[in-house]
Length: 170
Image (cartoon, rainbow, N blue to C red; front, top):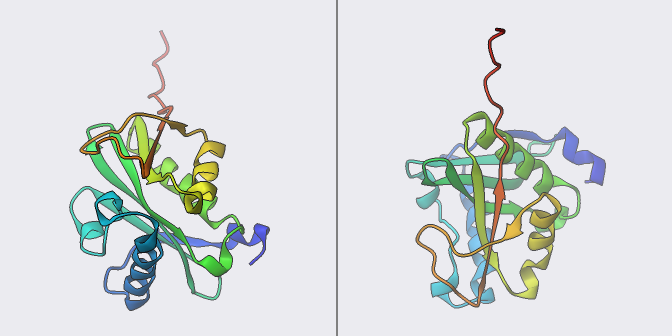
């Protein structure tokens, strides 16, 4: 997949009955396992992604292959957390993560969410993820929600400009 191929992605809400999705999400957890102690790993599993307040999207290539995932989970009213961002390792660098991220942020704005935050690893393995988020305006922040300071975690946040309703002419 080339850098321009991300525009041909089909992004849709997840079908939790899809065996390919279950395998893709398990591969995500397997990738993360060696990066930090279990107490510092905050990725949601398939069950966690199905709970109330979580919206998971999948990105599919034109051939139907599942190539990426991204989710938003409610932290508090007006504040959501980006979760389960993953691109198929064989397709990294093709713009899939940016496309999914922009889709999730547009969804959040459409629902008047004012802030999206995330937790990612502080290790070199996560440097490309941190660079992606910074490129899209996320800045480092203090832990949010139920998170506590952790040397294995980097916390980032983005204030969203929510479109206001048009004003009536006076």
